[in-house]
Image 1 (cartoon, rainbow, N blue to C red):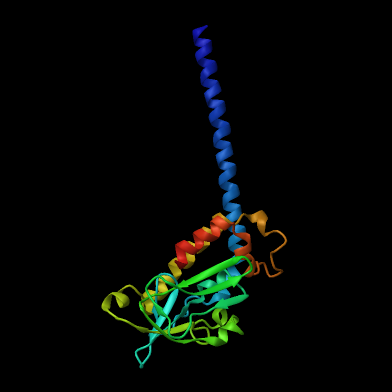
Image 2 (image 1 turned 90 degrees about the vertical axis):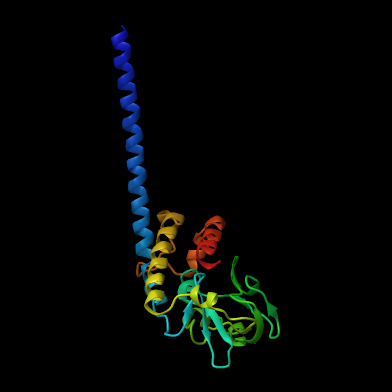
Length: 231
């Protein structure tokens, strides 16, 4: 009798283990399939963003802002092409005022699309000397030509020391860093956006319209993306 009970117990455990492993295998296959669908849908967006085209002499910062030192001593500051993966268009731009004194970390500008908002925080303490007023009527420049017509503001730094330079990346280092950021974002989006969520919004060329990315993310996922890449 004891032997039979032991045998039944072993069979029961083996049966449970079989179904648990089967469920885990199905979950893994579903996750892989979802990641593949998301990857295929977002691929055209990554190609259009031209993320690796970082001009020479431009400092790339870890929160996807860029800065360039002008002959006058002013720092011209903007956002790189990363934001174009989350927004295809921008409904409203809020710029700083000329003469504003900003401290590092202060919110100096906001970009809004629908219920999604992206805040631009000051890279350095200083005084705002110029703003790109054309963004108010042509916010698309921020996405289409981030290093040219899409600059945001210029600041006179209170103190420009070596730590500001060493915290940024340049040239080939910047390109390699951007590639790693792209890979990281692909992974985050693949886990945050389920394949079924893409049904009905996938474009005919196999890509999801870029403005849909922000909409498809939950508030929690959106905040996670912003904190991970743009804060």
